[in-house]
Length: 151
Image 1: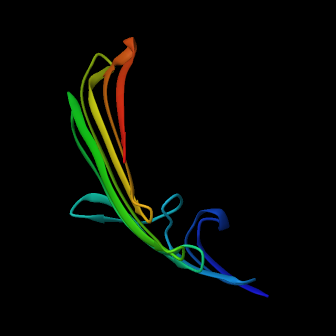
Image 2: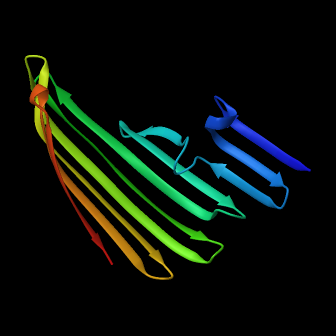
């Protein structure tokens, strides 16, 4: 016997979900890789999640997006971080961010972008970092160079 409760625009896109039965249970207020709880805070778009369950352990994370624009261009970006403890036991955390600045003229935009992410977990201790620098050249194309570091 199982009990399920989903609150969202569909079962597959429920930001709030509760399940108990068949040997597992969980309570999700958003998900890291799915629907999230969303709000505006100081005019910024913020999202978050809290997942607690027999298989998930405890997972929590949040992110914020920014957009500053005018008629000649814009700056946009986001930052996200989260951490968790799984029944393994395993402790993990991550942080990521990106920023993009573009100047727009004659129906096209050009400008640089930077993406950075870090993931850490233990046991065993591991860390992965990734950074990318890009430059959008409008209709001409996009250049991108990335680098990785793993410990």
